[in-house]
Image (cartoon, rainbow, N blue to C red; front, side, top):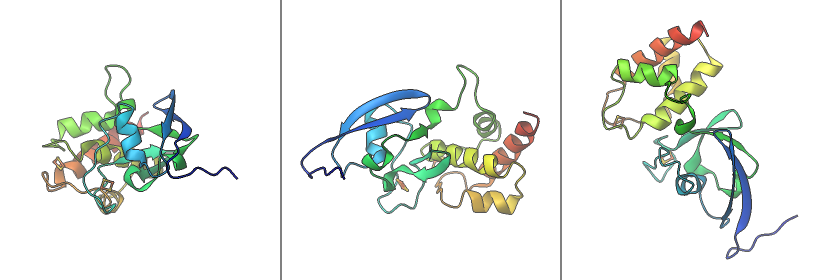
Length: 163
Ligand code: FES
Ligand code: FES
């Protein structure tokens, strides 16, 4: 077993949005900070108790709150962040739908909200309103009152059906 002392740094490899990264981190460093330091500053921190979901990313196919994982735990993982969703200039249908339905105001929850919506629609391409509410219940927003976010996810679901 490999032991890393608390004052040592560990080398970790991450594949983020299709590109390989290698970095050195202290064992206690949270994944959310590692990602932000690598330049993925769309990943936000909104709390220190794992409630808000502003830090949500997709890691090895699952939506996770990156503030509640250590960087070293993510060694070897495949990660998708909001920065990896658009294809060049072309927005992902969920991004487009948030724009059209006014599903954001300050935009602070939006990257996490969109990544959670992405995971939700992957697992349930045709969700009911109740399933959408449940599906984003780990993501807090203090601006929108949620309704426009729900409408955006419905619109995205419709548009993604054909794809
Ligand atoms: S920063 Fe709030 S849940 Fe991660
Ligand atoms: S848009 Fe401001 S917190 Fe959601």
